[in-house]
Length: 181
Ligand code: GDP
Ligand code: MG
Image (cartoon, rainbow, N blue to C red):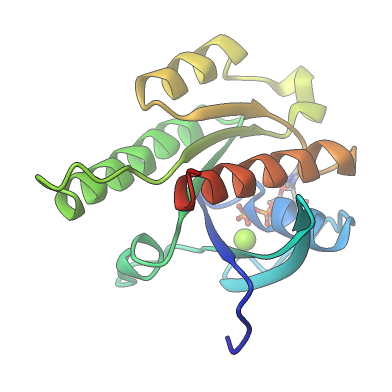
């Protein structure tokens, strides 16, 4: 801290192996490295310029282990990016559990206040592995609709622009919620 720049905090949630770290590293460094420490949890930040205003975009690349409290990201995040792999049906199930967890948390926090909720984003990752697809795009989209989440399919392994666009859209969305004028 110490700067007066606006900040947006985005937590990446999802099952082990879906590509949370790969998407984080891709956005932060533009690179895809094929191995990431599966147990690593860390936060990263990048300064972006939106409408001539510098903004700090922070990502929390989470890694859930038993005994770790979800409060660390539930309390921290301004938006939740829930990731599954289109090649793994179990990971799609896990994504729905994460969406439920976030929605329950919001209902508790904002009970009776009528406050706006944080943006929810559902990402179907690894579309470069189309031939191993187990979850259709339509299933992803209807799940997102159910949770009023924004939906994207993407891949951390190819085009940087696409991944960057997703994070930019999420950051702009948060900024609009923070200052709706
Ligand atoms: P995390 O546990 O969610 O952080 O998953 P990782 O980012 O560590 O990724 C798990 C494995 O999937 C790694 O071997 C990555 O290289 C690979 N991976 C992640 N994203 C993609 C992707 O979009 N396409 C492909 N082909 N592999 C990916
Ligand atoms: Mg990881």
